[in-house]
Length: 305
Image (tube, rainbow, N blue to C red; front, side, top):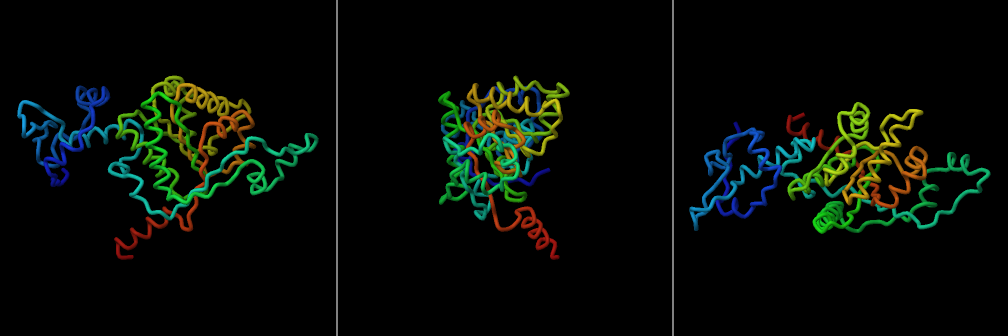
């Protein structure tokens, strides 16, 4: 059982968010696991009487937190992102915006395929993108991105997708997950999956991609470019279809990848690259040290090693 937390009654009232149909569903089905109040305020009922009007009842903060934990579980997001926001992470990660040129300098048609295969990544990037250095921190960038997209969703306007790419250990999955948590906290439906697992579920008919495209405000596909490809081009066809459907429906898609724009271009081809360049903000993340190794060093310190 969790230790009781201290919380001012007025703080509880101040954090109340509107209840959604999903919230009501949790309570009816009993999916909210913990029946006790960690703040020792509501006796586990999840409801509090207002001091100024005892006839009115409001949700206790413990119930709001239980709902979020259940939403994280349903969204397939790790519980470690409960109570995490962008400021929970250090500012060592730097972001570089890859802004696609409207017109690309192409190779001669007779040698195009060979030249593109042999072209260094740096040269490919220079031909296709204007790299815009970001003066703001990654926390500010992603907070602004999330808040703006939430506003667009609420106004039924087309939001912007996001692709975070770069080497392993720079926080791509964590940042994408925190964005997902932000939208859950704001009563939006989120679906998180690795790209390979998502495609496997489509292949086995465990999930219906059209239903996913329609039902979820935010789809997070982790480890794009790591999925398995066959001669049937099943993966490419499904990715193209889901990206197109979600763009048409005005939904947000967020991807993370260890690949780079040249990798994406060679693997996915012009059609999917048009969707990526035309509907996604592309941010390359980089940091001097591996974030996972840094966390491990903190554990060394905790264990006195």
